Length: 227
Image (cartoon, rainbow, N blue to C red; front, side, top):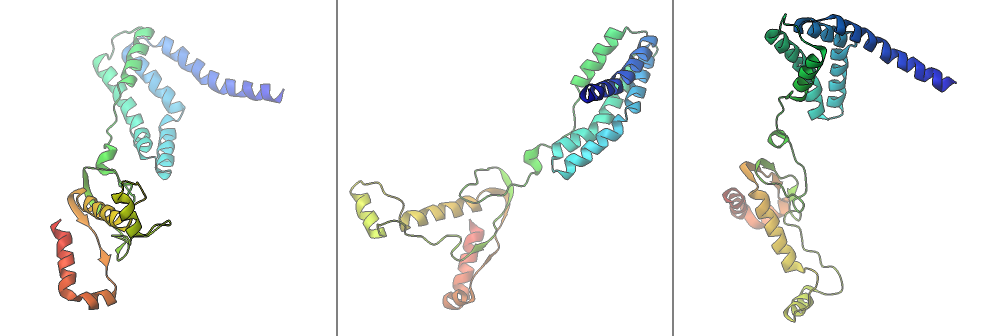
C-alpha cells in the first residue's frame, strides 16, 4: 500500500503540470501564443535553474563536455522559440505542426564545443605514450639512471650468454644492449613528439658534474637542444 501511495503521489506531480500545459496549448492558436505557453511551462518547472545545477555538478566532477552542454542548453531553447516567433508570429498553426517544428528544432540544436584534442592534457609514461601531433611536451623526472634507465639483468643468463644464444638463433629476453637501444628509442620519441616545444628539466649529481666537467655537461645539454 505504501508503494502504491508513493507511485500515485509521483503520478500527481507529473500529471498536474502536464495537464495544465496541454490545456493552455490547445487554447493557443498562433505561433507566438504556443511558444509563450511552452516558455511559461519550462519556467514553472524551473528548467533554467535545474540546468544550471546540472552544469555546476558536471563541472565539479570534471565532466566538462556535459557541463558546457548543460550550460548552453537553455539559451539554445530560447533562441529556438525566438526564431519561431520571428518567422511565424501571429500566424495560426496547428498543434501537430507546432510540435513537429519544435521537435525538429531541438534535434538540430548545436552546441559550441572546443574539440577535446585541442585543449586536453595527456599524462603517461614514455613506454606507453602513443599520442602524436602534440603541441608541447614536458618530460618530468629526467635524472641519472632514469632516462636512460640502467639496464637490469634478469633471469639465469648474463649479457654475454644472451649474445651467444642470439647468435645461435635462440630467442631470449632482451639483454643490456637491447635495453639500451630501447631506451635510446624512447628518448628520441619523447624529444620529437612536440610540434612547438619540448621542456625537459633534469638534474645531474654533483659527483658526476665534477667527474665529467662542465665541458662534457654542456655537450650533453646542447645535444638535447639539437634533437
